Image 1 (cartoon, rainbow, N blue to C red):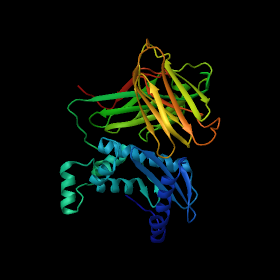
Image 2 (cartoon, rainbow, N blue to C red; image 1 turned 30 degrees about the horizontal axis):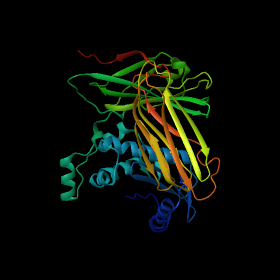
Image 3 (tube, rainbow, N blue to C red; image 1 turned 90 degrees about the vertical axis):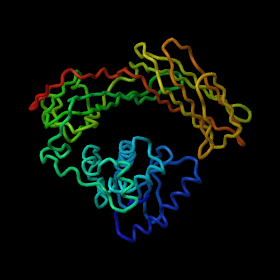
Image 4 (cartoon, rainbow, N blue to C red; image 1 turned 135 degrees about the horizontal axis):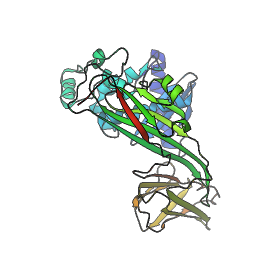
Length: 388
């Protein structure tokens, strides 16, 4: 699927020259970079999510992070609209909806909005009956549902009514860290999101107080937040959109040397006569007696690797040889009382192995109910509405 913002000439160049050249680049190279200088003075920026590649072709100077963040927002939005990771089939089944979303998000090549609550008012979530009518008649059943939106709060429609008034808050912390071969933490950053789900009637005004609000920096808020209240009092005052939304994202600075990881991962690589042996050891860290779940460890290998063998007694592993060879190790759960678990990878190469051919492993995991930032909601006040 393609959506163009530009002249007819630039559209033809992108379709006939740039995209085919970029497709050949993806299939013929092993070390793929997110930004690729394309033909005809263009630049291709892309992300890979599932089986789909989201690509943006730009012909003018623009901040790369802005484009990559836009592609990430499109991927997230499609997930929220379809309820699953987008595939070629879901794109085809919801073609009209996806096309309308792209038209509302971007106007004349400039990003207008990526906020889900605003876009839900402009492009309703597709239903089965709506898709049947669109496929038979060729006309879209979507209407501009935000015609009843408040001018003061365009992200929220008027006269919203719920039989049960509820408001949920979820604080999710993410660790971005670099660990050396000895297990020492080299860099450590805490990133977080405050996500909410609102089922409140009328036009409520909420004020949220956090326990460590003054320690947060690089805070980005949803448009519903009154920024001057945060700047003056470090409280989050807002009129919430209806349904799920991300209220804020934040960064918390911390000292790397004083931090301990919820999961300890150590790696060792040894060169052999015709290849290399890589050993990865995983053991539980400090999680407050909670289990570590959904552990995924990705180990990129030498681009010339073949005859790859893997030994592990726990979890599952998958060897991928397309593009750059790699091994992905998946563990469902590690409990605090579990002992260390090892993964051993052996492979051969046709030429001499370089010492830095396998120089990093990428680890992701989840610890439900555990907070590394200790951020929590101290109070949540409701104003201008009264519920029974």
